[in-house]
Image (cartoon, rainbow over all chains, first blue to last red):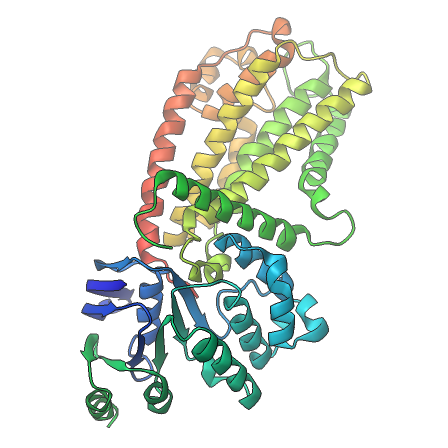
Length: 217
Length: 263
């Protein structure tokens, strides 16, 4: 389970302290697929970093009783001056898993060929997304946090992600953050809308969409 | 990971993360080219050897009848330790922000890994050069190794505490970065590297007694050639300063941890 309890986050700006998320409450149960909808700049990525624990809330708390992945965004969480392989080793060490066991899978999934042994800074956005996704699959989590990662990459990449996430790991919890309603409708049972700092959780997807559509227009 | 982990689990986790950061740091700093990570201590060694050679030729500074080599080795090795540790942590958070997407990578770990590497480099350089100088008979064997280790450890603690503190505060204010270089430059002649406290005028002795690194350098030298001069140091004072700096550092890290945004 993950519990968000009266979680708030503020950022300092030149024009004083700006609230990003106010008093958010949510419960994520094992195996659940939840979407968080929000416009650009609504605070979706902040939300996912707070859930992951990479960032700490200004007030309130996040309680995790299951293991939670880092935010799988395309790009972040890597040392770009290192090679893809060195990044795999680094992440394996941090999470205490055997790197050698993961190399085969990453080679296979990311299809980077010789580039796996080149600095990540040379990668294209698509290559980076493939590496990021492949490495994150080498560590087993109870809950995966997915920040628009699937929206980059080509059809083939999408299909492979689909197999890894929704078939092989169908029993895990997943939190998707997106401005793309279609993707969330396809994979989630519940959705929350983040708008003007307020997080509203809906049990019914259609209701969530109706509210989200109003925030856009 | 799951919250509510035991102390031993937390310790294991932290050790794992710091080790990962250490390996990462070795790769990004030294790469796999030419001598690779050997630069860790070859670089400080070249500094110390250079300074020793220059001081030997100038036959300047220090105020006692001692071989200049041992004076330079002890003095300059200490400078490398206290000066390079904070220099490596100032501004260290920014380039590591991407790694902070991983919940278990905390600010303390990033700073600590860098400090560990820096301290290891300076220590290896000091030890290796001691053996080299002994082998070349440029100096006599040290008189009391425990005293050397004691002074060196206290100086290392000082470097850790100051490094953690300045590393954290530099995230608040870039003034730290701007002022550390001139400050450490001016502190160098006062740090005890270029004089023996006993050889200074009494008024000056009182002034330098406020500087913690002076006490450490004196203790290291006491261990090396204590029978040749009158060493002046007070380790309780250094311990008090180090403790104060450590507490300040840890509280600053707590403050910064709430504000830092991975990216």
